[in-house]
Image 1: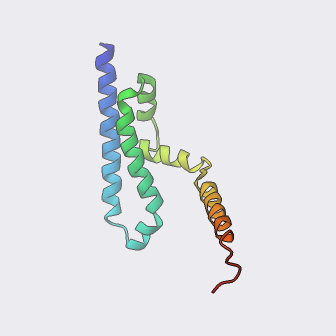
Image 2 (image 1 turned 45 degrees about the horizontal axis):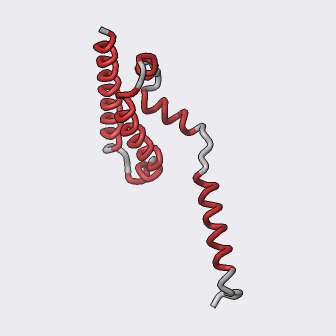
Image 3 (image 1 turned 90 degrees about the vertical axis):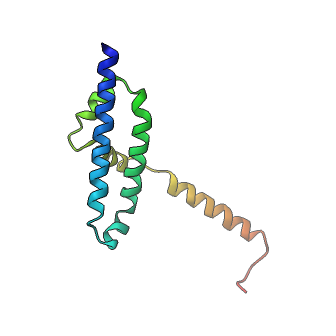
Length: 114
């Protein structure tokens, strides 16, 4: 019985995120190219969240599934909004990479631009 309830919850979460993602993509068709470019990060993040949730939904507890279903803003939007509040280290990693590459270039003895 518990297995059946959990399977129903999983299917409901999958159905919900599919519907949210489908609606989101449909709304994108009405946006201008300028708006699409401005929303590129959100579009990519929504797509990634959708894929991750599909994969992870089979491993979630009943409590987690119920909490997802009870997110007032929608599952994808709610997770996206929370994600925006998390400090991302990718800029720091890129900064370190560029600094390393510039240090390497200094080693070539190019003291002046040619």
